[in-house]
Amino acid sequence: MNTFKSVAELRRRVSEWRSQGQRVGFVPTMGNLHAGHFALVELARQHSDKVVASIFVNPTQFGPNEDYARYPRTPDSDIAGLAAKGCDALLLPSVEEMYPFGTIGCVQMHVPGITDILDGAHRPGHFNGVAQVVARLFNMVQPDASVFGRKDYQQLQVIRYMATEMSFPIEIVPAPTLREPDGLAMSSRNQYLQGDERQTATFIYQTLCFMREQRGHGFPIDAIEAEAEQRLTMAGFSVDYAEIRRSDLMRAKSPEEPGLLALIAARLGRTRLIDNLEFDSA
Ligand code: AMP
Image 1 (cartoon, rainbow, N blue to C red):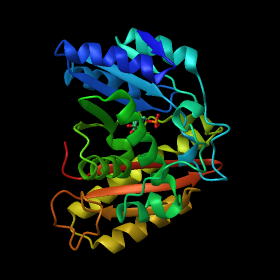
Image 2 (image 1 turned 180 degrees about the vertical axis):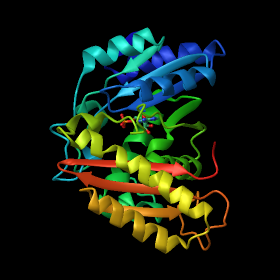
Image 3 (image 1 turned 90 degrees about the vertical axis):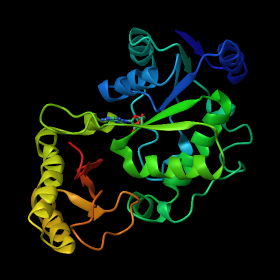
Image 4 (image 1 turned 180 degrees about the horizontal axis):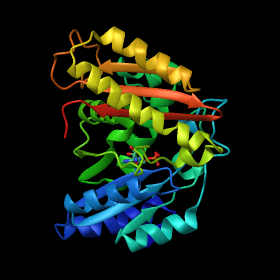
């Protein structure tokens, strides 16, 4: 696997591949890679001949009081892991390469509507930063397909919207959520969990399953949401939201609607965790 710090060099490599008729898949990440990320690389491989990953901890998607400075950075083990998974190229851009005019004076990207709800409401500006960096990465790498985890369901929907709206000729491929054996969704932020918090964190997935079960019994959506929030609060979480939504993230009118999912964001100590569960998937 070749590691590129310069976009120009990566582009040369990608255009060589494309001129040979090879399809290029792309997996953007913020690093500190775990099995969930590596599964994305494997899925990208199924959709393409060559796989490019990127590692960039994007400053513009973190709020002023969020964890940008302490976000775990482990480039050496990430590079070894990607190479072992047969990734073909890694882009490791600097902040200067990504934002040549700085992060204040740079071109902004705003996806309306969907970025104002759920995580967007609790992390103002977060999805603008995500859309901004993903648009830049798409231009830098120019892939044919790009893989995004369903774990960050709202992010996936924002990217889909942006890619359609901006006519990026890129297939957006969703990847299933990888979980620990006890159900906790894998996340780089899980390592912030201290002591008993790791065990308590499994309650998020249990609550998502509870919400699915209650929906199966036909309980009203707002009653299920209220009960879920109360259970999480009793378990020690500070809840940002515990909601049932349609697949387009608009509010559901009835628990009978197909394609519903439950989404939770909650804080445990200093750690903010998010997860979701699609009710009708296997
Ligand atoms: P991150 O490095 O956390 O920004 O994530 C990079 C990509 O990996 C995003 O598309 C995430 O949705 C995806 N991802 C993170 N955790 C998981 C997981 N447990 N299962 C599947 N995909 C994941």
